[in-house]
Amino acid sequence: MRKESETIEFKRSTAELKDAVIAVAAMLNKHGQGEGFENKADGRETREKTREKILRLIRENPMITTSELAKEIEVTPKGVEWNLKKLKNEGHIKRVGSDKGGHWETVME
Image (cartoon, rainbow, N blue to C red; front, side, top):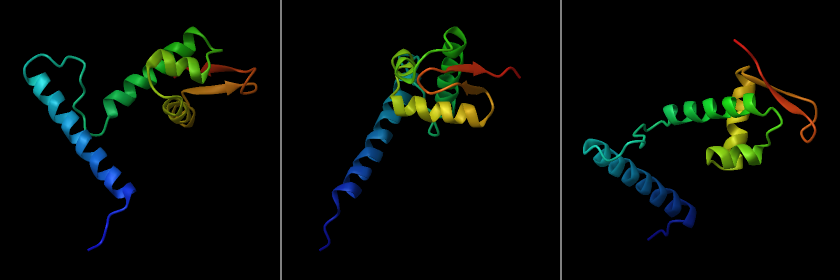
């Protein structure tokens, strides 16, 4: 009998947990108690809201740091970095100057 690695077991249990959370959110939404719970398997709507928040915060404070953004929108710093990279690649923002002394600019469409 072959023993599964801890990584495979972790991935399996994480997927089961995600399915359980989605099921609970669906039940809460059905009974009108789950306002604010997203039941989108792909997370597209949540990412859009996160990016909108990041853009708003950058407009309010172009000197805002990744750490400050993470605290403000309640995501991890890596999550902020991922969203910033997407926003830069899509042409919505640009960084002017150095990482420490520079600032963000939003690009008007």
